[in-house]
Image (cartoon, rainbow, N blue to C red; front, side, top):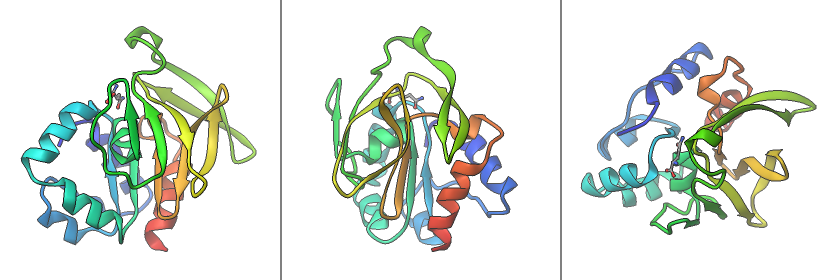
Length: 178
Ligand code: GLN
């Protein structure tokens, strides 16, 4: 509905996956996994409400994998602050919006990942303040979780679609294939 869905589509196509854009509840029945991209979560939430997509998304998430990046991670969380807003609650995490400060504090950095490093782009990113017992931290930056999975779902507070490395997308594809 909003955000950098085009970059996500290209990244998954590079990996041989078939990617399609989803804007209605009916289109959900055609996909095996869903990426909710970065953007502005308040705007996305507004559009999801207008399209009556909140319940269909929760229902989809009860059966199929969902990957949320940045604003998408905010939408997937169980608790949102700064300010508080409704979310889908597919992962038991609490997120604080815009927690790195203003736009000028957006940054590109290297984070530890899978025994090596991964370039991570943060754009007005949230910080994951709490990770529930059912969730697992896959990568952290400056002590805060930035890549988390819970069962079939995954969230990243950075933008893996903006770098050439496809390991994060691969992790999600494994969930979709599973
Ligand atoms: N700041 C946005 C929000 O709070 C998220 C930014 C992003 O997705 N890059 O919704």
